[in-house]
Image (cartoon, rainbow, N blue to C red; front, side, top):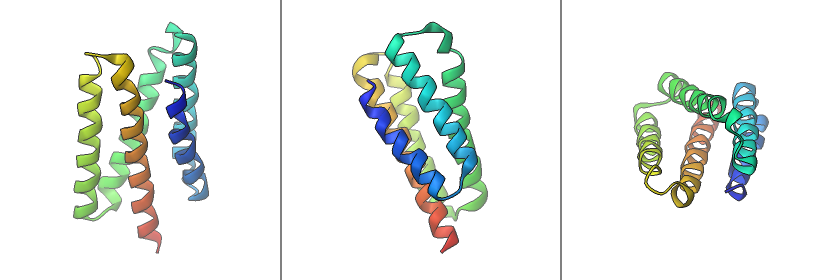
Length: 121
């Protein structure tokens, strides 16, 4: 399950290039805590890692609602609904479904960053 964290690293680098340092901090924290949690199955990260991950998603959702056009907001929210669906169904088969959650969340962040670029051009 560690391999798919590379998508988060790409988004952290992308957000650094766009100077979104809050997202860099949240993404780096989430990625580090998630990798520690998955690599060592360490229970001390079971509380903080989901909290930081949800804070990251809340950050991009709130800024998206504030900055984007209606069309962009709807696309971002639909994408986040897919992530929520995957989050919900992962309890049935965590090992095979949880990597898809990482991919959908990385896509949400990429979508947010792409729309942020469109605001500046």
